[in-house]
Image (cartoon, rainbow, N blue to C red):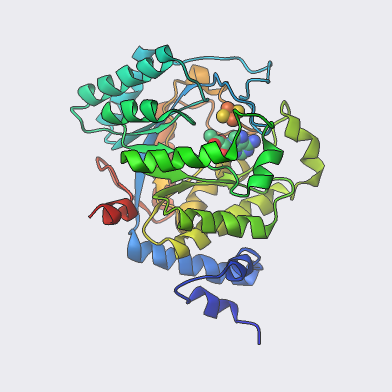
Amino acid sequence: MPKLFKDILNQSSFSKSDLVTMLSADEQNRKLLFDKSASIKHEYVGNKVYYRGLIEFSNLCGKDCLYCGIRAGNKKAHRYEVSEEEVLEAARYAWENKFGSLVIQAGERSGADYVNRIERLLHEIKKMSKGELGITLSLGEQSEETYKKWFDAGAHRYLLRIEVSNPELYHRYHPNNKKHDYQQRLNALFLLRKLGYQVGSGVMIGLPFQSLEDLADDLMFFREHDIDMVGMGPYIEHEDTPMFEYKDQLMPKMERFYLSLKMVAVLRIMMKDINIAATTAMQAIDPMGREKSIKVGANIIMPNLTPTKYREDYLLYEDKPCTDEDAEECKRCLEARIHMAGGQIGYGEWGDSRHFLKRKT
Ligand code: 5AD
Ligand code: FES
C-alpha cells in the first residue's frame, strides 16, 4: 500500500522518493506540509528572524553563467562598484540599527587589488563596529589563500550556491570551460568548511529541464554536505541572457513560487536547525513571498542596504523588487512584514546557524 502523506511527514528520515512525494504535494497536502514545517521551525529555531544587511558591492563579473543578468557577456548591463566610503556608511547603518550582520555580495572577480580591497573593507567594518557586526561574504569561487585572507580579516560565513547539484544540469546552465567547473565549485565549498567558515549554499528552482527528482537530489546534497545555511529561490528568466530562449518551456511563475515554498518547508523538516533565508527572488514573484517563506520555515532575511543609485544595476533577473527604496524604507517595510508573519526580529544578534554551533562543540 502506498504511504499516506501525513505518515511521511512524521518520519525521522526521508528517502528520495519521500522527498519527491512531498515536493509534489497537491493543495490539500501542501497545507499539511506547511503546518508541519512551521511547527518544526518553531520547536528547533524559534520564531526569531535574523537580519543580514545586504550590500550588492559590485555587478562586475568575470563569469558567464547562462541564466544571470550580470554575466560578463551581457553588454547591456551598466557596471558599477560601490565606493569604500559608501560600504562603510551602509555598514554603519546596519550596526546602528542593530542588524547583527552584513552580507557583501558581488559578481565573481579575482586579482590582487580586488582581494586586498575586500580585505581592507573587512578590517574597517570590524573596526568601525567594534567587532560587533558579523560578516558574510558571497563573492564566488576564490583560491584557498584568498578565502583564508578574508577569514583572517573577519568574515566568518560564506555563501556559495551550488546552483544545481546535478553535474550534468550544471553544465547545461554554464559555458563549457574551466571557469565554470562543477568540481571546482564543489571543492570551494570544502575549502570554506576546512578554513572554519559557516558554509551556505543553495540552488535555483524551476530551471528548464529540471525535474522534481533533481530538486530532491538538491535537498539531499545539502544534507550530505552538512550545509549550515541555505538560500534558494525560483529561477526567473532575464531577457538579456542565453537561457531566455527557454522561457516558453518554464512552469508558470506562481508554480515556481509554490515549488520554492515547498523546498523551504521540506528542507526545514529534513535539516531542523540550519539557517534558511527568505530570498528576494521569492518576492519578485509574490509581493508577500518572503513572509510566506518565513511562515513555512525560513529564519533569515537580507534587507537591502545597497545605495539606491546602484540597485537598478544589480539585476540578476526580471522584476527584482525594492530597487527604488532606500535602506530606511526597506527596514520599516520588512519590520511590518515580519511581524505580520508572526516573527520577531533578532536585533543585535549574529543569529549563527545552530547547526554550525552544534558541530563545533
Ligand atoms: N533567477 C534566479 N536567481 C538567479 N541568480 C542568478 N541569476 C538568477 C536568475 N535568473 C541567483 C544565483 C546566484 C545568486 C546571487 O542569484 O543563484 O547564486
Ligand atoms: Fe557572475 Fe555567474 S554570471 S558568477
